[in-house]
Amino acid sequence: MNFIKNSALIFTALIAITSSNNAIAGYKANGTVQIGSTYFKGGLNSARNSSGTRELITCLDKGTSITCSARTKSGKYKTCVSSNQVHIDSVRGIGMYSWIKAEFNSQGICTNLWVNHASHY
Image: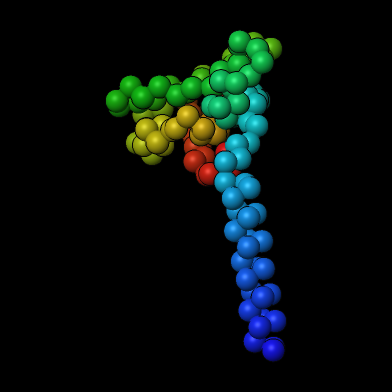
């Protein structure tokens, strides 16, 4: 009898875990474009589906360098460039649901670049 109760509990737990994973598998975060004095960040999908027509976040692969840019709904705009191979490789991995954060210096050089590909975005 104890074996049956334990089996039932394990089965119920597995169903709960499987159901909860299925419920969040397609979730995409709302990463609206934000610009600070030394950074910009946002999600491509959020910018694309923004209610305004101005919001933008993009990176362009130029082969030996990249240019990343962002524009908020209010029109604030920043851009940075880099020839760092790590940054170039990151840009080459950007997908339609990626989230990007770029940090830059006063000369407009990208000093750090993050591209998030996690399934929850």
